[in-house]
Length: 237
Image (cartoon, rainbow, N blue to C red; front, side, top):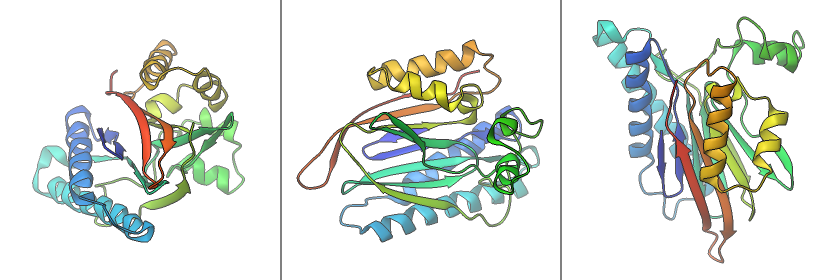
């Protein structure tokens, strides 16, 4: 996970504990490096930079799986959010998610790359059935598993008062959206909210590592640059 000025990345590794940590650390480091300085970039240019940065991370991780026996099968999700010129841009691969709470409405901004999401889209499962399906943790796209990857990129406008949540499935698999909404609407600081979310996921069983980033938009300045308060919680079992 990385939290820097205007750049927020959550990566949830897989392929065994040690290999998963390697994959997620590589993804975060390479994506942040490849994004570089976004000053003066247009929205379209930033979107392409996000896409390319995830593709670069995929290539590096995949090459390492080929060269190191103990790293074979490793991969990671990646959800990278960039705040620039009054907009958010999100690059997404896997089933870590981004949400926004705006005007007391919680909206999931990303769509999971997962088996159950495909079944929901096809009408074979309801969202409720998908949550408890035995294959609910099977993802259909990840960073590092194949020679190529196709990130989704989402774009939207920032508003003062927005609260953004980026989280691994260790959180969203344990806490339903209705409860996320209730907890996020209580007006806590980002640190208080992140701590509360992680504690609640662990209280409900903590079946997977939980990674949480909370960003509150305190204002969008005259130059279009957002001011925000941010906090995060590192993965924990």
